[in-house]
Image: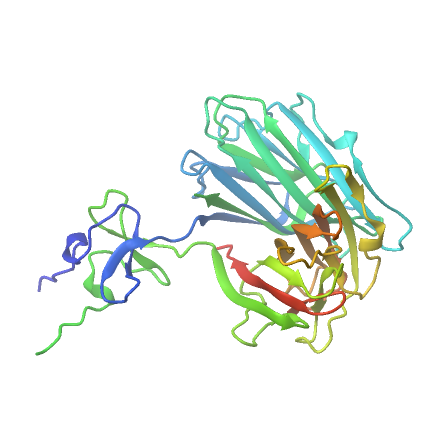
Length: 220
Length: 222
């Protein structure tokens, strides 16, 4: 028996690309103005003694192209395999064959020791970059590998697919330091390239990412 | 007159669990749609309130492993007492006690309306070192009719039983009275507990929250 399925034009509403079908504000008709929100989940990577975590456009359902003007990565409970290491990222313009985009960036942080022995706000010259292809560090102090110690935060990457402009990023993180204290780290800068950035890789500067997740969102 | 009801399988697309019905990108067919990654969970509105509390499982609040990241947005928080601080604390016992041990940092940028004083500086009186006290999100609120503070507090994985509970907050306030300042605080830290955090409470360091709104959102990761 042939089934008669309702087609897109069977409803008493004008079809609009990418819009959801909803009830109108009077609940007496349909409308096509109800969308899914401006923040869209794209991909979550979960570390399990991982040497790297990479998001490559077009691979494993990752979108990192001109679909969105802004991408947001959220780090949850990143835990290193070894003590006193640094979490960092780099950009690629060749689908992940090389992570070596030239970057210039700033870095500053606030810290406070658990024993109240010290606190400060200062610029950190060790973790900024000046036309360097090295990884951008995302923390201001060595990560602690104690069982309850971890690292969280987020990085915004703007318009990676542009072939006109450099690629700006802004990151803010909160860290459990290996010397027992709170660190609040900020870095911002740009990949100094007019090529499209189509991949980003995260790793420790030494050892593995023992556990944790990195989730990628697109922002409309 | 008999009514024809359309069911889930009446539409010309493959159904998918927990998805919505949308027009495709060419507007010539149906497709499934996602609800978006940021979900409003609860709005609390202050009205001369001594505290505003979000307790998992109470009053439709979700603050558990449903979401890996929670975002609180506090909007136009207006204090009742001059120069009180807007603060928060965590609970591991469903709100019976708000006293989680915390280590935090706090710095701000400031500029007064008279344009005679600016700074970016660490604020030692506003941080915590292994303290169970409430933590300041901003300082010395102006309580003139138009004075308030607004900002965000992001809480990471409160349901973890393995890791400490990190948070990050940024806000802006109209502070002090005779020559008001724009204060832009940046604070972060962690609840130093491996117990599940299941409630958050906001209050002024002195007096009530006269008015204002706090919204709780969950951020999906799937």
